[in-house]
Image 1 (cartoon, rainbow, N blue to C red):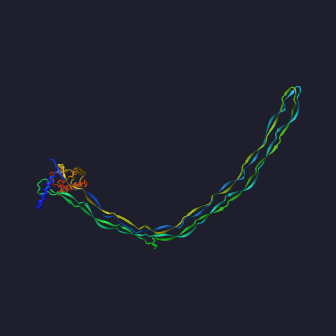
Image 2 (image 1 turned 90 degrees about the vertical axis):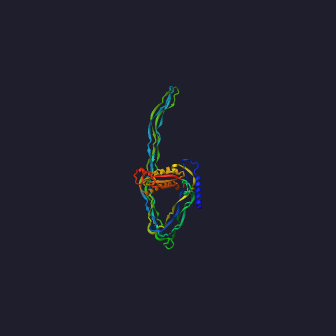
Image 3 (image 1 turned 180 degrees about the vertical axis):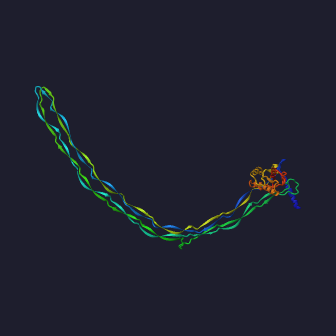
Length: 558
């Protein structure tokens, strides 16, 4: 009895509270929806490492191969080859008689000329006392004294002259190289150590991931059975109930110790702890290289005769006396003393010979030459080194083709993706919200579903974006209903209508991010036809299309 009384008081209190919570200043003819703001959650993806990354090591032993290698058994050297001197025969001009000069006589010249000689000089005669004269002999030089030049010839003598017909030179003599023998050690084979793999160590564990934190939400209880109000929201109790956290247990494999390598030392081939084997071979070694020595070749001479001027040509002068001629002339002894009468002089023309003395002129006598052949060294003797290649021998040895190694493969860690819901904002009871009264009843959502299909087309998505998203943006809840036509079985039509209603809800949740608590979806199949086109009735395609519809309406929060 007490429980019934308590329940009645609770219902009464809830009804009074709800009645007092009606919209204030409501206007007639308008509709209001009581909105409960839901908790806003968002999905976060958490990646959990279920198995740690580790290394897998695979040991590979050393690989050997036999290779041929060449050793030098005799060092490369060279031998000297003498290149003889090069000679050529040249014509040499030898002066057999030196250049000189001789004197050539240039004869004197005799020039004949006339000269007028006063035979009787001008005088005067006296008329009273005649002048007195006497005859005298006068000696006239017809040819003056001169000299003539006499040439004394040059004096020559023949002498012997030594000329070099082949100059001194030298030749090269090769001194051979000196060799010795020695024993050389070489690596005959090589051993290598090996590797041993120590595998990685693991332990199994688990990790708990909270996918959704604990929260609380408002829940409206059932309407009291004795409630007399026609309002569906009347006589209800709102309860703030706890929502426990949700978690998932993920098994985890942890890496305790990664894989490692242990090196095993090699076993020496000679038993001395060394990893190599040795061998020997004989090699010829150059002690002293080949050299050369120079041998002198004396010059070759030749005696030739030559004429040498001992005393040059000279001249001596021989005097030629003057030639005179005696002629008679009258000479005034005493002039007249009285009246002088001028008596002109009496002249006589005689011939006079003028002699230019003889001279000499020097005539050059060119030197007399002789040509003889002379051997001349054009290029002295040299040596050229001719390379003598070393002698080799091919030996075999064992070598490490590939050292012991490990192949390291990293096994990546394994992860598991867990979707976790995170509370963004806490919801609760809000005030009444005015809505269009048309939205409180089922309004058509003009999606043209293809026959038998529940897939949203691009056009259907555009209709949802333009019709439902503005309404949902106001914080209200929406109930979706989907219907089919009568064609097909009742069960298949029922399932198809549910899939179509759920396709709209999934698009709003997954693409547009609407909280699922704000949406409800119901499929009614062919139970609510809008026309006469039930089973067995023949109808047009347009009439059937009218029954394939999806509707929505605004509802109050639960």
